[in-house]
Length: 119
Image 1 (tube, one colour):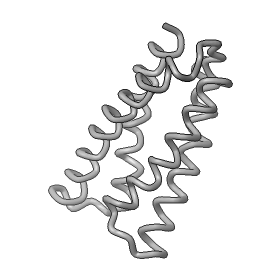
Image 2 (cartoon, helix red, strand yellow; image 1 turned 30 degrees about the horizontal axis):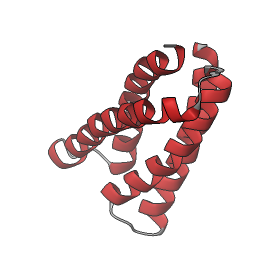
Image 3 (cartoon, rainbow, N blue to C red; image 1 turned 90 degrees about the horizontal axis):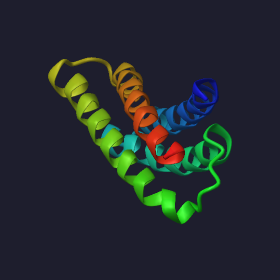
Image 4 (spheres, one colour; image 1 turned 90 degrees about the vertical axis):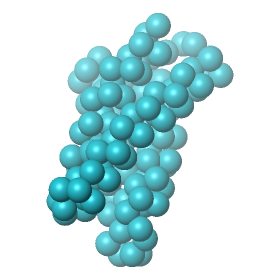
């Protein structure tokens, strides 16, 4: 299961990173909004792939979506606070800060999503 989660996570991370980096570096969108856009798109992709591939869940999506969104909000909030701290307080490059904060998101997300999809 962890290998499947890592595969999905890698794909989702690449998708999210590409969207965020294009928004920040090419479209010159604020890093906070870029981060949100990338994660919003990643959220949809992540739910579908984790439900059907990683955790092979047979529960109805209606029963899983609310807990999944709560996990997303928790993981996203913690990673975004990390991102803000890295950029605004420690003055670390935005691109590097995004990568570091995504690691935090992934660790929290896996731990909590495992409980949702495996009950």
